[in-house]
Amino acid sequence: IKHALSMDDKVPVYATQVNALGSQLKLKEAMDLAMKVLNVKHAKMVHNLSSTSPTLALTKAKKLLKVKSDSDILGLQEMDDVDHHGTMGMLYMLAKYSLAGHPDMYPSIAYHMIKISLEHGLCPASAQGFVLYGLCLCNVGEAEAGFKYGKLALAILTRFGRRVS
View 1 (cartoon, rainbow, N blue to C red):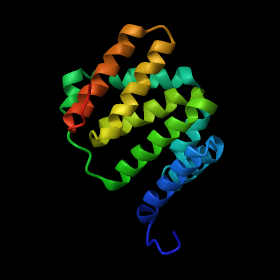
View 2 (view 1 turned 180 degrees about the vertical axis):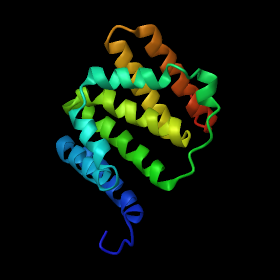
View 3 (view 1 turned 120 degrees about the horizontal axis):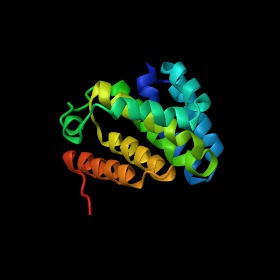
View 4 (view 1 turned 180 degrees about the horizontal axis):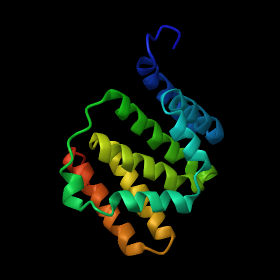
């Protein structure tokens, strides 16, 4: 990390560190590091991740998706910005490790992943945002809508050549 020229050069190293901490079940440390990395370029988003109520995050996501059909979403361009790919990857890791310690962050993580995808295009990690959102909907009794977003996530993975069984 000392020899990295920019934050973009450091993100893959930090991602490895986050995963190493998570695999050692040091979930709080993994989440703290992921939040620290996200905070460098996205301080407002990080503040919102930890302070937005789950209900508000779900409402914001519903508002974003209200006017989008599945075909609209699947027709989005491919994300081509390295910074946004890194952000999506770090949000994915944050979601993975928050399951055990802070599941209340799930709706906010899902909202930000969906927002980034709708604004900057799809990438394989976009599927995680939509499946998280679907899981959150199921958790509040909207199983049919949750299932819809789970299927959309599978379609996104298929679009990127990921094998789905």
